[in-house]
Length: 326
Image (cartoon, rainbow, N blue to C red):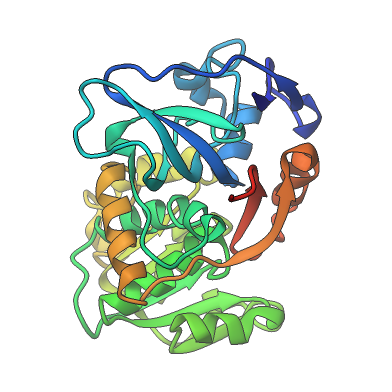
């Protein structure tokens, strides 16, 4: 089969398209013919192994998994003997933040990281619906979100940010979205009640205060955003921050509450992929979620796709068209 491979860490140029052996599903896995995949921030971090401590999981000196890619959609070709919830011929989508090998014509993945696709959506839409929603959901389920609260989403047009806006609207939260001028109408269509154009004003100088500030692009900090928070408010970032401060501040801010006006930060360790997939499937079926897709590339254009994602200028998701239906 055709597959993107990388045998060392580095820039997009280390990625190559090659012919490799078809994988074989283990007892608790399914074999999927991949129709669409994506390139996202997780993929870019994995192929560069940054931050460095990621190598403890993905491979100390070189990638443990030769084929990159995390999220996908496709059709099940075969199932392992212990798989009970899925069967050959079903359309599915899934995600594995440690790497699913989705940038290839076929992959194998555990049953608990894949679900059947909702009816009426394309493979491209399905492939782009898991990573952003998974991380957005793990932002929101860290806090006691309540109807009528106010939240600010920085980076509202990224994969995570666009999912967060839609998910917060599902929970009936009043959302202020931060984006560039060109995307104002987009974030309004996703459900934002108010928009701040970061090309014209500094959102950290906003007069409004919020129960939650979700920095879905990791380009701000708790210290810059704390005055935006109501007493008891929470700041959460998708990035480790300067000197990995977002790993340590969740332990420090609760101890010195008076110094920060009882405002604190949390770090969203992502768990329960199956739960995220089932939630996004339900929201798609209810017409309450739609993945934002920027552009599509082929497997042969994989280096260009990674280069584009690494510019930080994408809107929503970048899709890889792997196979044609039919």
